[in-house]
View 1 (cartoon, helix red, strand yellow):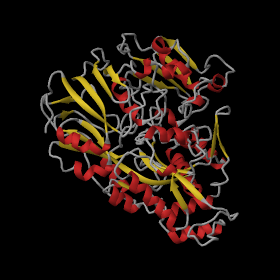
View 2 (cartoon, helix red, strand yellow):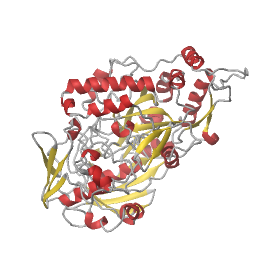
View 3 (tube, helix red, strand yellow):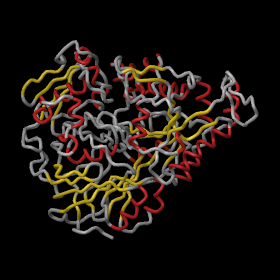
View 4 (cartoon, helix red, strand yellow):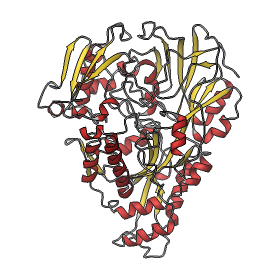
Length: 595
């Protein structure tokens, strides 16, 4: 989700077609909100709240209605409007209206045959054959072809591709490594059988095939005459992108707004709405915009929940997000030539230091007071929205300042000059630069809360350059491992695949800390192995992985979250549950918003 969701909610959502840049689309929602709340209730740190996922409004839809959608952000959307190339959740929110995956998902985030294409998995579970339905066409009238899905894989694996989605199942395609390293001009494991049918074979069977398969085609006839560098700068993905979703892009004011018009040729039928207008709205005025009827749908910041729930003209939808917040450590660099993460920052390599910084953080009051119960202490790096794999026995990292001091002393960090802050094991000044994002009313208080927590145990931490940083520039610097950044506060949207390799693998560009570990490599490989088709085996692997990450702490999980979406009471047929958001069915019951 860059980078998340939602993350950012990808980041926060992230990420992600493939993830989801925090990261990114594919954000989905929970399996069964009632079940999730019941199971997650076993966690003593969790605060139980209940929200519907579908609007309750009923009535006859207005013919040719229009809807206003709020992209709540303190920064413009970047405008890289293609699933192969986008990185941040703002772009994902734009993409959802005009483009989509060939394969739909169900409430368990598993691919189904209900989308624009059907699929069949081979008996050995190493191949998938995708057949595109006959009435699926790009917005310029050209049919969506099997060759367009091949083109997406050619872009993802191209030697010049430097974005983060060359991960997960993509490198596991037969022949992809040779293609990616320039040793082959084609991908031997992908066979276009006819204009509508494609077969993709993988080097091994993996349970991620049903939840992490890349099924976003790219129109070769529209973009195929350009290099990757040219595509990234082209108006064809920035101001005049095409997809095959329910709405077409009519007009874009870069970074500010998008006007969509109905796709009369949509494969599921003519959409109910004639148009949708998306506009970027500052978080500080989001609730007011909903109250005034300026917006029909908007995901609201948690810190505005108390105001939002008092509105009489709106309804709140909610769910536990496929996301979490975290504190990351800058531990190395990305080696673009090798395509892998390289550790190499002695300042932060001491595990006891990271552990001390973790137990110094008091997260419970953050969720309760700053976020009104909509966030609660994170226990692991697999959120409870994956109830089959989240370790409900894991406890949130204990807030224990005295233990933090003990860990620092054991690691050699002591206050040798009696100024209240520790020096490093060599007796030199020890200070950390902390990068944190702007965006909400609690952004500054939250950053200062963490800085004070660390100061309480003798760790001197200062805001990077004395200020909070805007979303896009923040992630650009984090991804580049800016040496001025020691630690950073961010968030990930995990996407619908529980496999965490895309965020923490040795070859994952989204692994912003650049942390690597042989045991991590081993467990991530086991999690997508043929043995992992046995659910109990996979559960055991990921339980062990969660424990490893809580021990090594390349990132400190801080908060899980509920996401809340505010909807005007004229909105019909809108459901945020996984696999249930059908924009062609969304409608309005009146020409003017309820005020």
